Length: 236
Ligand code: APR
Image (cartoon, rainbow, N blue to C red; front, side):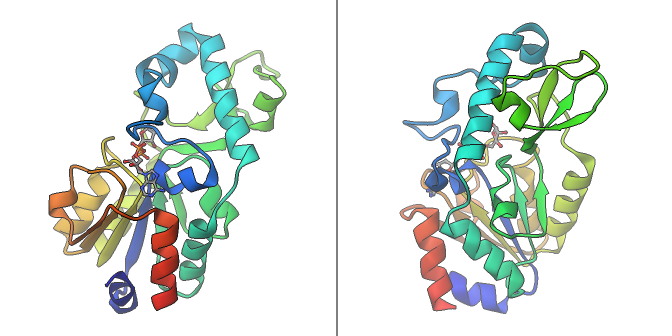
């Protein structure tokens, strides 16, 4: 089924969430038994308020996540998506993930709606650093300002360039494939709807229910993403 749609489609867009990276070893946020937000309150740890008023908790939490994206890397599923882009089967990846694994696997057209953990920047002067500084527990800029990951914290705006690129891609898509997202965070979760409203076939590959399942043309919930992508790839 999906392999046929992939071959027939002229504008296929992939939309990924944290479920795309669990098979690399990173935890997701809302999986019933192991999601990060099942144990921590995002408002208290992943917000500008936490950065400004609970800086030790903030840097400790994000140092852990930086260590994770440096320890783990892309899995076969990321590699397949990069190959599909090379072979012209997909146009781009819109991702909510901040691990950089799509680019590490070779994907070129990647739009990071929530920024990246691979970089830090100074909250005062904006100077950019590699996130290795957090590994070394260097938390301050040469100007004295606090260094923070270049991700979108709760309450912050999404990067304009990624947002508008994703908007255009969703509008033009004739096939829009969600991989590993609970579709519970706005405005990222609007893109599957925009694609569907503009005539795209919507596919959702996710091990738990999402609010858009009834709206999708195909829902795959009983397979892990990696295995499903490998199977589909073999049928191409
Ligand atoms: N195969 C299929 N589905 C999977 C797999 C897998 N191997 N692993 C996890 N999943 C599913 C989970 O069941 C879950 O529903 O992926 C989904 C991930 O959802 P979330 O944990 O909510 O992650 P995401 O949708 O990316 O969260 C969006 O929330 O905290 C913010 O900024 C953060 O980008 C993140 C945003």
